[in-house]
Structure formats: C-alpha cells, structure tokens
Length: 131
Image (cartoon, rainbow, N blue to C red; front, top):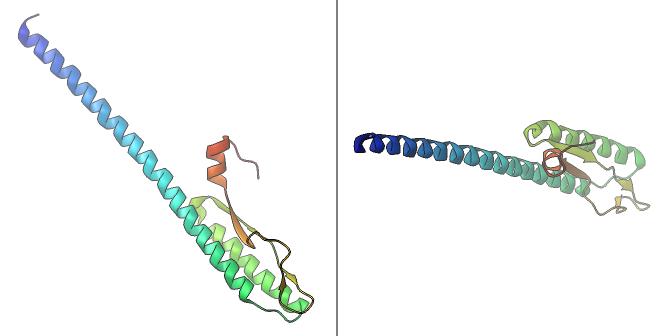
C-alpha cells in the first residue's frame, strides 16, 4: 500500500472509533438521565405522601364514626398518590389511625401513615419484585 492508502485507512478507523465513542456516551447519558428522573419523581411522591400524613394527623376526631370517615377519606387520597405518580412506580400503603381514649389519634406506630414502596428501585436492586 502506498502512503495515501495507509492514511485513508487510518482516518477511517479513527472515524469509526469516534462514532463508537459518541454512541456509547449517548447511551450512558440517557440511562443516567432516566435513573435521575425516576429518583426525583419518586421523591416528589414521597413528599406528597408526607404532606398527606401531616394533614391527616392534624385532624382531631371526637368519636369512632368520625375517625372511620377520616381514615377512609385519607386512605382513598393515599391510594390516588399511586395513580398520580404512576411513572415513579410507587406503590402506596395506608395504615389507618386509632382513636385515642380521650379523642385524637393514638400513636401506636412511628412510621408514616401514608407511605410509598419503591417498586422500580427494588426491582433494580434485587432483580425481581414480589408484591
């Protein structure tokens, strides 16, 4: 081969390597953006669940009937968080409150009343998901 042919072959190989590098960087960036978007969207859903829990705890029922109504209403709102933030693959869970002996809520558990389970995060960490 002559010098010009070697130069053309070297330039073609360099161009292929450059294209491969650009493609790999694009794929890595897209995966990073998608993972970051999921975490941000799930965190937004968690903030909404915490706000719902604080709002629920501010209620002060006087009797069992009123406590049951409040629990039902906020349970439905917690379930709707799973629909509103469906892209985050958050599964909402509701733990109803218990009326205290002197009215108000009895603190029988310290975890939030409306909490979310990160289905996608579990699947990414453990490889599968069981409800």
